[in-house]
Length: 69
Image (cartoon, rainbow, N blue to C red):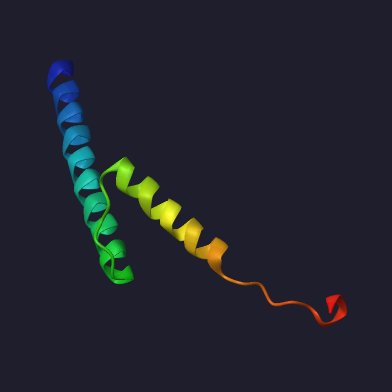
């Protein structure tokens, strides 16, 4: 009787785990689609996108305050 309870508990945990995994995957795809970007799965792509964003931010000119002129 205890074995059936344990098997039921393990089976429930597996099912819940699979559902959470599926939900998290769909949330990641939905948030990327909302931003107009494709989901990024490669760490190298993430690094390249970060580097490009950083380079673009560094190229922008900052406004000069009136005091410094």
